[in-house]
Image 1 (cartoon, one colour):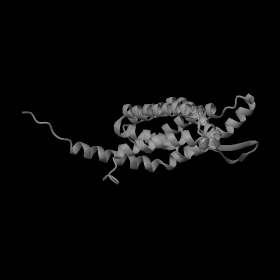
Image 2: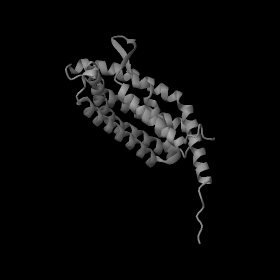
Image 3: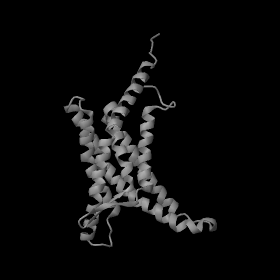
Image 4: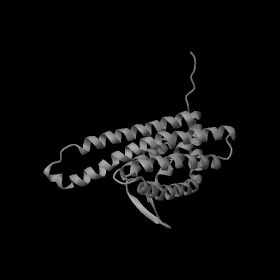
Length: 232
């Protein structure tokens, strides 16, 4: 498969991974209503639309380049989140000029929220993403590379349950409310969030095959044009 617009497949995959991280960090604080089941009000964070992309990207990298390369990408993502937290802390504490003073409260509120989301992401990423890699790699070894669709989805289902629980609890637990109120809210948040992410994982399965095929094609092409060393 030829390069699309001259882009290298691995670079595109990493770029999509970084995009998913930053979109969820900066814009993932919004919660939207899903529906009601009995007394539970089902809601979901808007980051639900990009989070499955992160797990899919990591699984594709494991399939083609191995788990160590995937772990390196995950660690890079954690570094990006840490830098974003530090940047948000620094920028929100800088004084504003009279020209932008009217936007200061909104600016500090929005990006101050991203600090808490960033801390929640670090905890969630450090557990769920590395868990996803471990499960996918183990299944790949035991199944001898067969049934990519099954390996991808099993790894995603388990790791995204951990990610959803850890991230949403840390990000949205209200310290000024009781445990019962928080538990009810979080169950109503985690349940649909996880279910929709599972559905997204299933729908994105063809993208896993496409990504693996694209990366393998580029890898073979790079190996074919590798200069051969000669001895004098």
